[in-house]
View 1: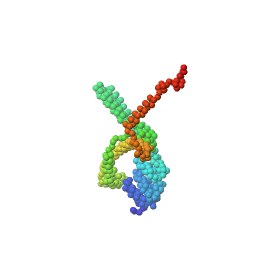
View 2: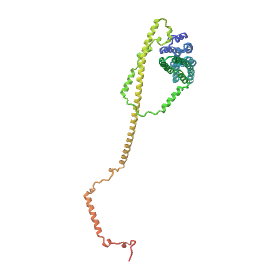
View 3: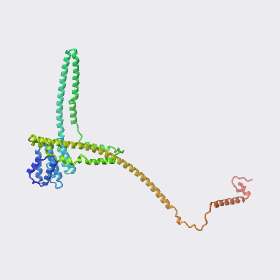
View 4: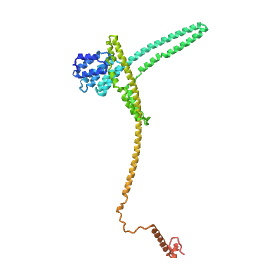
Length: 430
């Protein structure tokens, strides 16, 4: 790399444009000469104040690239830039539009997320942007109110002129004969219709008052809207039912096709990145000196426009495809969650059945353990065999016969004994 001088830095800052290649090249050169960080920041700040409002955002992009890429090698640039960034943000936001303010907010959000500066510094940087935003709507309201007043006055004059012409024609109709009266009446009706249409088509008064009310109405901050949206999502009940069925193979195929999408087309992206600086840097228009240079630049711009238009069309199609695939993924995820819940329910059912089976098995095992051990019973060898069924019936007959003989041996007197013989109560003696 070439040696560092303040004059060389001034020249490079003058030639700086908002292309990524130009910003990164100068950023690497300055990080290489980081031992001159004080001179670099002072020169950068001086050239920032001299630059046109349209080029100041490019200087902020350069500072952002230097601060983020130099953190690994040392904190010199972040500390040195920290002393002039507040004034720099105020200078850039002073004469900037909404697009520039959004870009500055993006830089601050990146710094806050990555912890490049602490919260107090970020808040001080944001204060200048908030002040600029608070001043901008007042100017817009004043300009819109002035324009609306002018439109209202013009509409009033038009209505007065139309009424005067209508009254003048009415006077003429009274003086003319009956034949012309019909024609003039038709003209009057057409003029009335045109007058009413003009009132309807030019509602400047109503629109001006509505716009003025809308511009003066208090708007909710973005943070409040974001918090409200989060709370609304938190209170929304989750989807329990599964979505439409999604084929896994079709989903995989769609995801594979995204690899050949426009955003992954390195060739076209390289062509866009290698476009000449004259195509997108409006400040170089002052260097055109003749018609031939203007025609060549026009041709380059047309080619770049066609290239970008085709690429933007492809990107829009890719965006639509990604939205559809996102919906498919959402439905597929819902289906898988539903299937998972069903599988978990079945798993719990089978676990309960398994628990019951294990319980029955343990009871059966305990019952088997409580049974007597047959091996410990005494030996039955040498004993008489058990009687058969016939022997059991014969024994029953013998028992019955012996019982009958015993009953017959009892005396008749004893069989006819009365209660008096036993001295039972209630018996009377003669």
